Image (cartoon, rainbow, N blue to C red; front, top):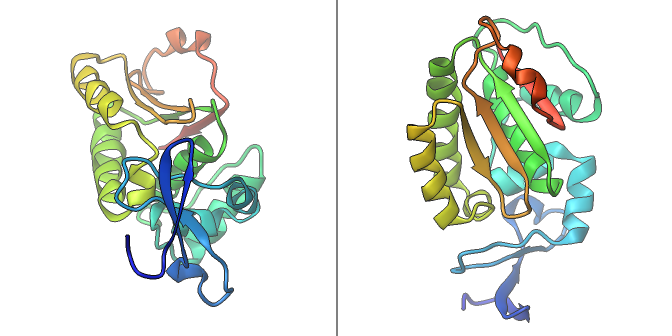
Length: 200
């Protein structure tokens, strides 16, 4: 166990309490499992993250957003329906990624989806670009997925052109359906999602 950590058990899982670097100035502590396959986000922090998605993005995902991206994330988070007409290269897609993942992580059994002009763009500019990068930089984010299920899903994603899916330990799912919104997507009418993003 690392020096200065407090070890405790909950349902036979060892956890540690440490002072998170981003919260040192506020003197807050954040519960984290070190060296374990699972990391818990305690209920008191989930409640705080509901009201501050920028802090949630930094603590859970290690996201370093600029001022405009932070404002965009807050706008998405607190506004039921939004249209973002920002120009090319302003960081819309990375905010979409952070927003959708936070919704899935913080809200159990949440179903979210993102659509792109074509499926290959979604794979290159969203799925294969950001999932590996954020999993590499944040053990907290990486631990929100069941690793065995994730491996099976990745294999299924390569075989199944219908949709790419990522499942979370709390029962949430993120979908990237293959039919693009420029094509004939009438078969999407039967799908039910809690959150949908259309990226142009």
